[in-house]
Length: 454
Image 1 (spheres, rainbow, N blue to C red):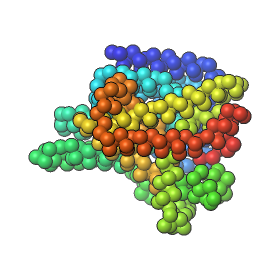
Image 2 (tube, rainbow, N blue to C red; image 1 turned 120 degrees about the vertical axis):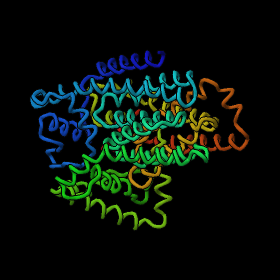
Image 3 (cartoon, one colour; image 1 turned 90 degrees about the vertical axis):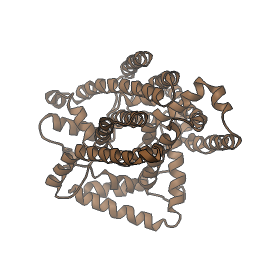
Image 4 (cartoon, one colour; image 1 turned 90 degrees about the horizontal axis):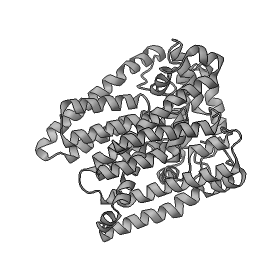
């Protein structure tokens, strides 16, 4: 009941912030999601009219938005329509808070669940994304639901639990394709956790999970084959992301450069056929990866670590792009402090909590999810925005450290202390300074130097 109360309270917080923020400018991929949702609500199918794109991004989030759009209102007043779906998104943000609490209880304990829910309720990034038309919140709700199903099966293996996990992973896949390898990580976790005599059942139920995932996604894949005459399981976004993420320009290859991508994007979006665009991005991506050998993996590893770990936030990009008209410098500075400090605190507190979580499979499950996610972003694209789906797990382990600091810290062995201290020092010495130039610009001018970079 406490977690539910916190979740309901978080909805009130999000509505209050939405009211105080005034008009929120829709930027970047938000336009794709919203306009595609309007097309769906109008009965015109999944298409983004400005580029005649029919599978440029996954369909799950536009379909979700379309359920709450009145087409006639959207045509007359797009801002009013977008604010109406943002109100629905706020409730989705409240559901995410509830799921964070349930995840904490399932992995660690009741007190940790309450603290994790409190963290999710007030975390600035979670609040901000409740007001944005991005797929992060929906995807994270589905992913955390799927992780809860994985944990439930681990505690008591059942046929229907495995099938339910597959459906949730399938819906998550229709929102973000990274759910496919994450589902594979979940099945591997089942097998790893099972006793030798039970591993056959883990494999059978893992196959069931994969089957239900495939059945959930299959209608969309068949639709894509019919309209694109090409096998496209979910979307064409993968190669565009890979091309964006593999621009490693000298001398400052650690920082994605928007200017370096401008020429590619201009050419990419000028190609009328979306499959030809995907082919162009694929050829460009593979050429870039080949050209950076043998140093590519080392460059990408270093940059992916700092981009996913940086205290940066998409909230700061929205501020820099003028999404909050009339926002004061005092408010920008307050958000900079709250957002940066809260992200750093959660990640740093999660380190000892994760190391100390030896029983129940929590540590290995988090490692599997975070490892697969990191690997995908290593190959493709990385951004602080892509850290969003991993934050519920970080909040759970941070809550463990907060609730029982003596037990957590006291349980660490000398070698574990060294590892935790080294990781914390690396974060403070590398990830935080990486964001420092942008933080200074935000503090002094209220905007980034390069707000439209990836």
